[in-house]
Image 1 (tube, rainbow, N blue to C red):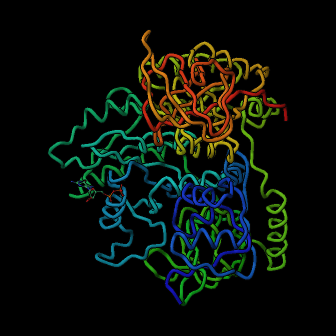
Image 2: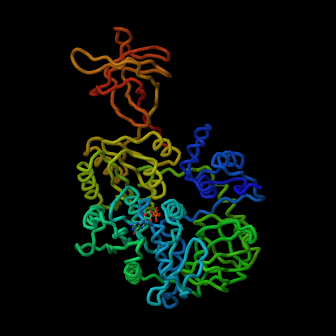
Length: 592
Ligand code: GDP
C-alpha cells in the first residue's frame, strides 16, 4: 500500500476534496477544466472524477463504503453563537477565547504559534512533547487561551463558508520588515466579514530593517488605526524568533476577550466545530473537536456533519486521555465512524438511533441541494435584504490606482448611509483575481471593478460560483448602479458572448497615426461592430471597441475563421505580434 492512499466517498464537494488531498480548490477546479469539467467549489463530483484529480496530485483514491456529503449550517451568525445567545444569562460563564492566526505568507505565523506554545503551555510540563491536533491551549496569569494552530486563510475561509466560524479573536501577523501585503489585506477582509476583532502582532521586530512606523501607517490606511494614534487596534511588537513580546500579545488577547464577553454555558447543550480530522493507522478516524457550548464527555454520542459515533476516548493536545472537555477546550476524539470535514458542526445526541436519523436527514438535504450553486447578484441580494435575510450589502472593490480607489470608497460609503448598510470588505488596486472571487463567494459579496479587468480564470470561477462582477470606468455609473440596486430597480445585467478569436501576425503603422493588427481569425468571427479584448499571455492588455475591420483594402462587416484581416482597435496602438484579439458582443441577460 502506498502511503498516499486516500479514502474518498462516492460523492464529494470540491472544497472537501481539496482539504483531503491537501491542495487548493482553485487547483482542482483548474484540473477539472483541463479535463472539460466545469465545477464550482461547492459542487459535488463523483468518486471517479475525484480519483482522477487526486491522482494528478499524487494520491491513490479508494472508495469509502458510505457517501458523506457535508452539513451546511446557514445564516450569518454561526449556530453555536445563536445557541449561546439563547442560553439563560445566569448559566453563562467566561470561557477561554479562541484565537486564530492569519497573515501573509512568511510573515511568521507558524513561528509565532510555536513560540507561544513553547513558552506558555498550560500545566508547565517543561519540554513536554505536544501532539499536533490542530489546536492547543496556553495559560497567561492563570487564564486559558485556545489557539487554532492550522494557520492560513484556506482553513478559515472553509470554516466561514460553512457558517461555523470558530474564532473569537484574530491575531494578524505582519512582518515589520515587509509590511501590509495582499494576504494581510485578505485576512483583514475575512476578519471584518466574520466580525471578529483583530490584534496585530508586529513580528520580526528584531530585524535590522524592521520599520514599525511605516507598517503602522499602512495598517492605519487599512482601517486598523493603532491605539497609540487614537484608533482602536492593539498592535503588539513581537519577535517569534527571539520569543519576545509573547507575554504582551497574550495580555492583549485577554484584554480584547474581556471586552468581548466571551461566554458559554458549560452545563448546556453540547455544540462545537470540527477543527480537523485524520485517519490514524491504529486508532481509526481521529477528529479534533472544539467545544463551543456545553461539556463533551467520554461515551457521548456525537453527530458531526454526516458522521456519527460513540466517543471511545478523548485526548488533550498533550496526548493525555481526558474524561471531558468544556467550552473552548479542543480535544482529539476516537469513536466516530468516519472522518468528518473541518468546519462541520457537531452536537451530542441522546441515542444512536437519533444520530442515524439526523445523518439520514442531512444526507437527503445535501443531495437535494447538490449542484444548486447560489446566485449572489445585486438584485438577489437586495431581494434578500427586503425579505430580512440580509442586513447589508458586502462589496469587494478593485480599482486601477490608489488615487481612484479612495473616491470610489468614499462615494460608496456615502451611499451606505441610507436604508441599507454597505460593507466594503476589501478595497485594493489591481485586476480582479480568483482570490477576490473566492473571498466574494465565502462572504456573499459582489465584486465591483473600477477601470480594471477581471482576469480570465477569475471570470470563469465567478461564473461557476455565481459571483457577480460589475465593471465600471466612470464613477457616477458605478454609484448610480449601486443606488439603483438599493432601490431594487437595477437595469438588467448584460452577459458577454464571444463571437470569435484572432491572432496578430504583423503590425502596420498608419500614416495618420495608430496601428493596424494584421491578424488571422482562429475561430468564430470578428465583427466590425463588436467589442474587443486583447490578451498577451495571461494579461488582458486592452478592452474596448473594434475601430476598423478590413479585408485587403475593403472595409468589411465581419471576418470568418481562416481568413486574414486588418483589425484596428479604438484608442489603442500598443498591439504586438502574437497578441490574441477576442471579439465579443453584450447581450441582455434574461431575467431568471
Ligand atoms: P508563515 O509562512 O507565516 O508561517 O511564516 P514562518 O513562521 O514559516 O516564518 C517565515 C520565515 O521568517 C522563517 O524563515 C522564520 O524563521 C522567519 N521568522 C519568523 N519570525 C521571525 C522573527 O521574529 N524574526 C526573524 N528575524 N525571523 C523570523
